[in-house]
Length: 326
Image 1: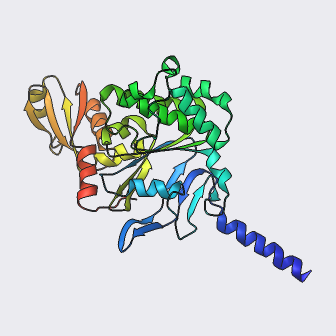
Image 2: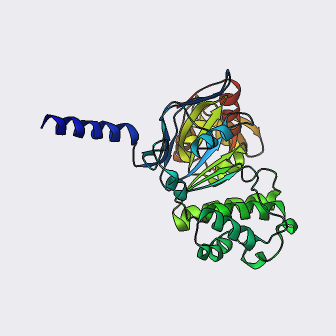
Image 3: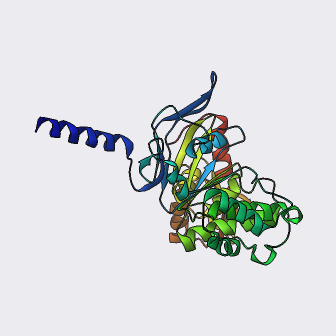
């Protein structure tokens, strides 16, 4: 009996040490990595919910690509602190990578082959069924040009083919490193729409790194901001917008603004900019909504609201001042 108790305890401790919360597609616990004496990733604790589009945002050189290489096993962490779908990456076999699709920087493609031939080569090398090729080509919008040589593709088409390669094993999780980098506006929109469709229609979790704040805001449901290897912020997009209001300014469009402001009691702090525009300071999250409610409740007709500074200024404060809000 004594040996049975010890054996059960060992198994229990092993499971406890190699599993994380099943509500996360990706979770890291104080993940660090250095090249020599230079720390590139510093105590990174990510929480990527299942079926989310998680934007991993940061300036160039912030540690995004190194983090993704750690998540995909391309770089080996010395600690057991990376969990994919609740299980330790370090203690899983190669089969884990059938549930992960990756695109790291520019896709490796054979230019003299067609899109379909590129897919067939990768499917053969990875032991994947060729029956997936038609589906992924249609998903990324390359079905009509699948027999054209890849050397004739635009950069945006090549990026979509790279995503098609990542989709071949029908993964639950996609890890994409700067997929919109270098694309023209139409190419960026194509990638954005594709990622949102994969999330909406196929229920995939998408982890996408970017240095483009505006694009992350248009695409993602959750955001993590990394700077100098440190996670400075992590939350939902909606909470990010509320947090970014603090310390910003809002311009309210109010017909007849000059006369209406004179009739408000002191303490509102609005400054008439001319015409219908009135500038109000926002001192806390949710301040815009409360200000709008207060004005309308006093009979002030608000026709429009636009933030000044706001998200971009807030992002710059975090990355320039090494400010952490987690």
